[in-house]
Image (cartoon, rainbow, N blue to C red; front, side, top):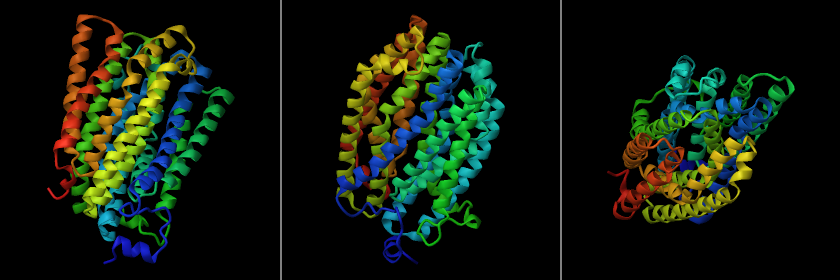
Length: 458
């Protein structure tokens, strides 16, 4: 049986990076930078809809599009969490030098992505109006929101498969190829938005179609990469199926992440429904701030992905001290960068919100939220960074428990209590820094006192 390292020695495997050798800091920065740029373009991708819709179709259409984020994440978060488990399994076997196991894990994750995408299409298209009513969507915005969502969910297969393929490629240490594909699809999305909305003057549904077509283009490029012959990761269509042993491992490491994502997104949907009760200006402001906050989340995501891949590969190779070294660096880098971005968001909040919608009520509420949460991005970064370390070490159950108890139960209880006592939107904004702080304390204790480096052995 070929080992990964032996295979790589005999074959030039473009893009694949063994992170068990070399300077950890250089490797992690080299991995994180393309991911950071990828996430930047991902946000550009998502923000283009909001920006162009707001400029071309007005505040109601903007509210319909920007209020979509929490519901879309609720629908896809579970599948994406399980895909994270697939990435951990692939990275672990890659680090351990087991090529056959890497191949079976890749084909199993792809099979999971195809099934998930088909299921998500049916559920999303069918239950969109029900979910939007449950979220207390403003009746004035409802028809546009239903229209946007249904077209968006028709492209669920492309949405899920792109994220699955990116997870596979990243798990093998290649963060550059997904960047190139995302840059192409982001530019394509913007061009189609301009063509459909500004050129053809089509409705809000066309913004969703532009996103779906762009995602589909990304999938085609990713699959072309994975189907390339002669490489360690070569995919064969006939091998895409569920391998029981690999599915069991992927579910073991991915199910907690899927549940974690789902409970976070469920809590965010509860928050969104409370925001929706304040009317369309509040909806537009909250959704616009979410787009801006997405940029603040970029360094967290990029170093988290680098951390999970680095730690999985090195623990697979039983290099425990090296894994600890990488964890410390990724946490510090994410926290510092996130706080710097938070300060910028605090200072320039009026200009940033005004880019999307210059309606005074929207700007006022958006700035108020930004200046409530932005200086606490360091806490958000710390919590997610330790969660990424846990996932990379096969301990995904830990962040699931923390997020379920703090970011779901405590956050929802807090909002329900303060909304019962006073109908003031500012208290909703404070739910985020409060729960970020509580989770950070718990994670700090766990990180310092637990034996997380032996997670796979146990």
